[in-house]
Each structure stands twice: as structure tokens, then as C-alpha cells.
Length: 323
Image 1 (cartoon, rainbow, N blue to C red):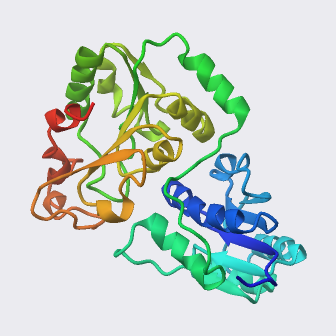
Image 2: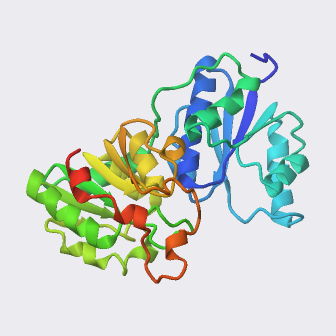
């Protein structure tokens, strides 16, 4: 290990699941040398998920859009420059981030190279090996939420009948198709879960999906939090659940990092790359084109349907058998 590295900056501004997948890297570095000071640069949205992390000394949030030659980029670069980092681990190697680090004068850098041959967690972790060859890969993801958020979540669910199953049906309008389960199948699954477990279904999703997901209210004994909670509030509620079921998404990876048993539903996305890393089981569509890893499904090009055939194919019975 390089003894001249005492203070490092890790950069990943998004997406949520990707940031969760980077946590094993800095956790491994901190475990190898508790005296190393680690700062993390991320988006304002994601900052609340990291501020309570004991392995981070500081979280710096990006409050405006980083763009070439903007005043804000220069201001942010000056903030980073004043920190006098020995090393930057750039896990978001876009042109604008490279420009930011150039302005910040951080000469020593490690740059993330994406490969689909590895799970994202391992891919991010391996980025640090050049500077920290002795770090050991953590077996499980861990995420630490503010205690205040946890306490509020406990209050929200305290009177709900257990077991608590979170259905994360959001992302219907995602740029990537083949990641969301059909609404009618969610309803069918939810009804079967209640019949089998006698517990409560918690509905999770983004505000923009609230209207299109309204049919989920047909599920008996469900509590609808879609669009009602902030990101950290939603994560805190998930932390109190007994089970999470979701397509490939930030909330799915958050659940696994919080130690919540999870079932991931996979169509277009390669599960060996973004599947549940720990505390989870992946159900993978058997359609012949899976995983295509395409943004747009070739079968939906001339169709008004929202849900890809690969996700339509996953049977509710297959999911129920794992509960």
C-alpha cells in the first residue's frame, strides 16, 4: 500500500444503485487503514444515504449541474483543491468529472473501467487495487441510514401486520425498458402474498409513477407510500421490511445493503452484473433474448405496451415459491 496516501476523494454522482455498489470499495480501504481520511463526492439527492456512514469522513454534494466552463464547476473545483487530496478514485469517468478533477489539481487518480464480465460491486472494488493492492473484498453490502430516519420509519410501520413485504413497482417510465414488472402481475402477486402470509404489502415507487400504479391499491391490506416519501425516508421504511421484491433498481440494491431479504426480477439487464449482491435471489426471465442490456426493447418498437415480453414472462408463482 502507498504510505503517501492519507486523504482520498471518491467520486460517483449517480445512479443510486451504482453508488450503493461502490460502498464496498471505500469500506475495504478503511478497514485496511482506519487512519485514511475518505471523502465522497455525490449528488445532492444521494447525499442523505451516505452522511451517516462511519467509514466516510466527509460527504460533499453536487448542488448544481457540473458542466464545462461553468462558474459552479470552478467553485466546486476550488473546494476540492483546498482539501489537498493525495488521490482521487474516479468512479464516474465522464468528461465533465475529468475536467472537474483537472481544475481541482488532483494529479494522482484511479479511473474506473466498466466491464460486464464482473458484478458492479467487484468492478468498482477492483478499481482501488492499483493503489491499495492489499484490500480485501467485502462479502456483503452495507448501508447506514440516519437514526432519525430509522426512528420515523419504525413509527410508520409499528401498527402494520407482519410480515412486511415491499413491492417496488416504480420506474415504469425509465429510459431502460425490460426492468419493470407489469402492473397486473404486481396486483396478482400482491394478492397471493397476502393470502399466503397474512401480512402487509408496502407499495414503493417514484412520484411520477403514482397515477399509473394506482391499480396496485387493489391489493388487500396494502399501504401506499408511492410518491409520498423522500429517498432517505423510503430507504428507512425498506429497512424495516421483511422482504423486498423489485426489478433491477436503486431500491432493490438499497434493500440488499440494508440486510433485507430481496427478490430481484431480471429481464433485459444482466443479473451477473447488477443482480442482488447479498441477501437476495435473482429470478431471471428465460426468454431467448435475455439479457439484451438494451435501452429499448426490440419487441416494443411499434407497440404502445410499456412492459417488455421478458418481464411479462416471469410467473407470479415463481416469485411466490421463494417467499
